[in-house]
Image (cartoon, rainbow, N blue to C red):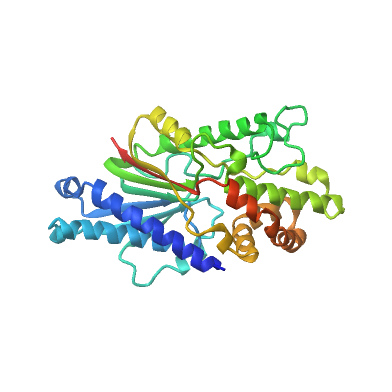
Length: 339
């Protein structure tokens, strides 16, 4: 069985290989040199608090340095500045306390939502966002209205819900990505690159067949079990919806093309980093808990957390076959260039 650190390392290595290729092929360093800019600026939008964000930034810088050296421009090597962005509630103190002491860049924190402008005109050369854009800015209001066809009673996600629920999620995701993309063209230099990584599902595959959808369905079942036993109320479950959306390449292509300021250099669904049956129930549960404990605790309280995830772990064997047989895709990897 594979543990969580091993899974994270596998994911990091997979993304590094793709990003190395993108920078080697797509980054125009001659334009950087001709502009006499002495600093290469990178933004990590929706950064994590743990070490993954530092690894990702180091990988980008290593690839840029390699490009300069391989093309004979080592003498023009720029300095690097990295902007770490997340909501104002993000624990920036923990993040900056754990900055690598020998890092080859200047680090700056940028609190605020990436659904809008964050930086001055043409101040960035590279934008990176990993597993942040799947989070909706808010739960669609229709889901909480008992008189709406999209009222999501007894469920916490859209994967197996009526079409009206999925449509509400889709519409909110489109609004959010539109505001995200609208904020970036003035910030990125012409020719600048933007790498976006998020959960993805192939075109034409139903949401109920995504790994994320199945995972959240089983989490919802566990919450309903707690409600039936009186540990929480059904009203609490009915008013709780996870603000997470899994997009397809077709959806993202349409949103990028509608924006009109970027060329799509690459868009692929990458295969899972590890086989589902290589993950223990405990590893899957720890991974889910790390991402969802905060939002669940805020709604239901902290008292149920251990019990909820213990039950989820015990259910792991029940849905492992479904995950293997129905799940399609894993990560959506997108490379955009400012035109």
